[in-house]
Length: 507
Image (cartoon, rainbow, N blue to C red; front, side, top):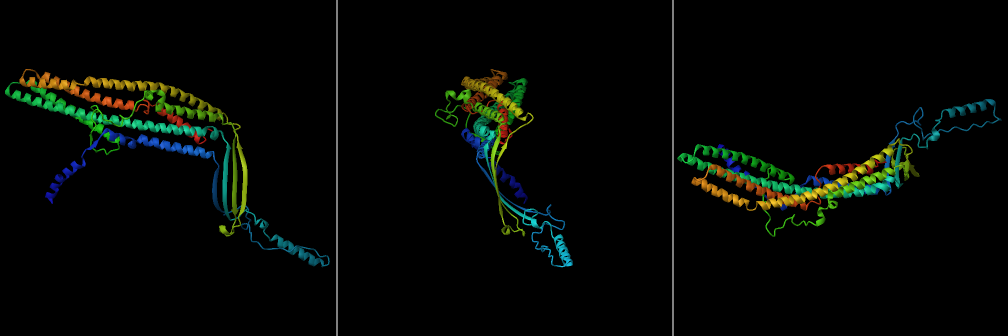
């Protein structure tokens, strides 16, 4: 048993290695996963569903409404009950009508009158109400209610336009969310690739520092190297170890970020197959198929500007609705019911009767203590604010487009400037290594050559990352949201006002 337990770690180690096999992931695959995995895209799609529901609800308000109802009522105590109980609908006691006969003796006529009065005084005075619905113990009511709005300022003048504008705004929000998801995944992908490359550069520099330390230690042992060079080599090696630890931590965080955006398991290892180098000639990718037209960077074509334009439309609708609040609302109503009062509580034993009414309801605000004027002032201020934000967003879109183009040009220029630098730095480090080995140069010269090589490799990788991200941003620029939080605040305000209009809050 003990031997079996000792062998379990040996068996589990290969299984764990197989479970942690890295998953190959290209940029194409990451972009295909990006949109379905984005929470922002899911929220935007839910907003579209909500906007479609608002459109259907507004259109339904323009059409007739028919509602059915059924109810049963059991009366336990009624104000129409007598002191001895409820109204007795089954009373069968009758009194003879008194008719005086002058031929009879006076005594007999008096006795007949007294018997008639005594009989009448013993009867239930509410017995005649037995066939009416008052005080009945059981009541069934089957009804239909019909209503048709003939005129309403909110429904006819504002709500349909606001609903359609809200749906267009929701679709633009979905487009912006999808573009933002693609850009974020692209940035995270190349950030992870860059951190992986930088960690490799740091590890290579550490290996070179270890080699230099070994050579210096051998030189010290044979007496060809001073103690100062040995100490300097040890310090350089230890500093490079700290750099490797930092690069490894950055790599872990960037890969965690990529896993989070793609909704992959946190412990899922990834092997990125798309390199930071320029794509070879003839290669195509999802982003390369996006053709940039001259008008794609125009401010009017930006999805963010169009969203604010729809927000202005919503505010215009709200303003127009508040101006029509003083107009009467006319509604046609009709109620039809079949009512039965069974004595035994069984609905099939009831004798149902019909009750049908038709009416027109007209409501007009006569005195609101300034509420309607206040609604108009608030709507006009919101409209002016929305128009000002639209102008602000238009100016921001122009700057954002110029900035994106400038970033791409700068990244491409930096990339071109780094071409050949890495090869030159590698050649310089090889010469410095030979010179140091032959004893014709100092360790300072070797260290400087190594630092220049590491810096050249890092600059090359960073420039490659910036070029790919800048290209992606420019390709998606038309659908990307503007930088800053002003747009989201404006859209939230517009959606709030639209919801108030849809629910009749403006009236």
